[in-house]
Length: 353
Length: 258
Image (cartoon, rainbow over all chains, first blue to last red; front, side, top):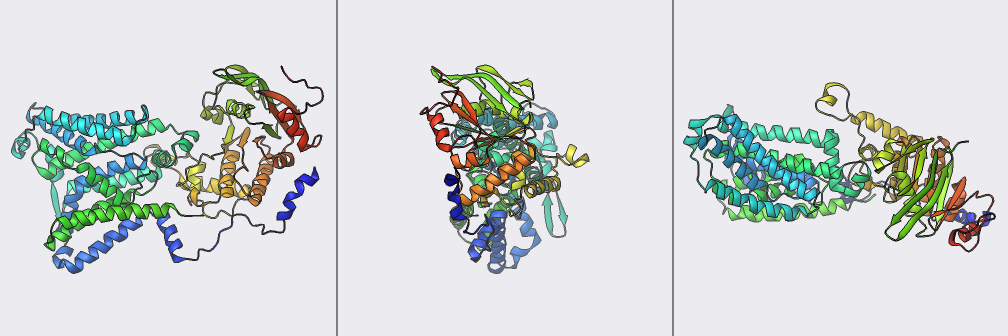
């Protein structure tokens, strides 16, 4: 028997160190590692580069605090939707219905106060409940029936859009009518000046939401479970995580955040128009998420990157506008950024030991 | 000495196939028990029944003399039986510390932990570092590096360390060396001995006869859905074991079931 076991003696002369760490030689490999551990770095670099570029070429008006805070106001609604989208994408899912859920939610909020004369509190609660309910349905279909998230939300996108238009008869509620009933629906339009900068409560809501979600994703067990479910659902299940519960919670939470986006959106737009249901809010949110470095395969990326991704789109739009460029340049550049971001993601995940 | 884990008369049928046919099993405290058997002999069903992944149709499992009925792997884990799956069940993009505490995170004491449910990261990292240190795995330098940046042997090491850290009563290792090279296998075998030295009994499922004969105290040979015999590696050769396992030869005093 000793004979049969001695075959390993041949390896005894070999280098006995197991799995030691080599100094990384190529700067490219080192960069790959840095980006691997800091997924928000790529969008941050792009954002800084864009700001520098427009600072040089769009004239000094661009650098004014007024301009930069105007960008924040413009991106607040999409930024909030992108935060919701991020949670879903981290679980390796996608929520195509997020935009129409938001519109349906603010139509409900508006109708409650204008048509039914309900107090603002009830209207807001109803709007949030409807948004959360849509998310819950998505979550149940994805986790219980095991349908692909793309198909589920493609379906609910159409269903919610149709219900929204049928229910509202596509009637726009004028700002004056809403304001006459209550001030509360426009609360996020309230702004204050800090020097030349104009900050709305909507912008503050977006930033607080990102801070809150960053804390949740990085410093609570639920947040780590979201990453684990998106990374490898089988491994997560074996580690004792109920992947079904996590999925239902994530889609429902995304719905609630869409409700917040609805409220902020009323403040931003003033009037409440069901016809905005055809706007591609869902794709704008997905764009910000992808440019922000969240992997569509799940489990990777930082929510701070999504905030940068949202700002990248906003800065680009504003900067090109000030340079009097054709608006289609923004569309073209956004497309290139999406492809670039996914290519970088693919490269980063090939990181080796 | 009383066995720490016993099974009596386990039966598990999948349709017309009987995977476990009145199977018995005994694990002694502090030993490494290897479970070997040909493909389809039912050894993985046996292990799944013990680790809670499969509910047997008949029979009884006792842990420290108390009957247990696991419905999920989580229940087995709560009872102190940790399993290292062949796939390792780790989230590649998450850190070593995150993976070690996945599903049993520690929260901060006081307000931040209770109200905001904040995790106690320093405590978890210190614990993870200590456990890896104890098992001599500190070639892994950064406890916060993603598991996917580790080599196969290091990943296996982390998975074994996780099981040893929390498996208070039994650790089950499913083919721990199957995917590893010669040197890395050696490290994992040393690791298995280290875990035994800490008094935790180990069930080792392996197809690698040299590894089995090297580390096992006793070898449970599984054949046709039940325990054929238990041998000591010092009493038999590897070819005897293979002969028993395939039915080419019968151990003394054992008659093949009809």
